[in-house]
Image (cartoon, rainbow over all chains, first blue to last red):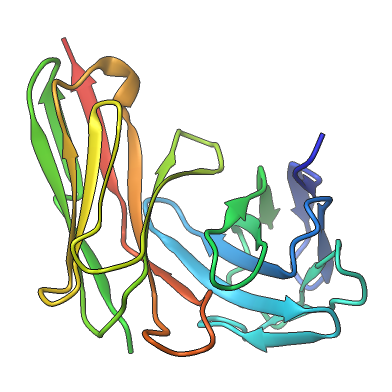
Length: 112
Length: 115
């Protein structure tokens, strides 16, 4: 089955700990994206990558880091510097930046 | 900075009625997307609008794009309960350039269809 997988579905962490969210796709898409969604709000772009070994900051990159060492993988690390990390995190991919984005199932992160 | 505004933010409809959701954006763009989100779920792509005057229809939903007015509409015809969800528009901020993909989302419209 082709698609985008995110794991885990739910993640709980203590304040001050870094945490890494996984995003994998087997669609052979070049571009991948990370978004954050807070309750009752739209999605905000954290980071995006148009090609392997290259990525750019989105609108709310502070406190987050990413890597793109393989085409199929785009992990997001939420660092202790992120002031309010509790949110629903969505990963997306597209064949290229010119095409629509397809979304993974999301990871709900709770930091206490 | 690109701003995307949807209205209404909340829409309660009776089954069988028609209504329109509006999506206004602040800077030039020629790519706009509509997505649907069910509670606690991910986003499902509904429409891709790539040029001025583009119109797409799928079932009871029809989307259009007016790039000169910086406005997209999502029209619902004869609503049914299954259409209850949150609908987002998203605008690609790189108009006419070589680099696309940086989407700005509206706040979302929560649609409830009741008997």
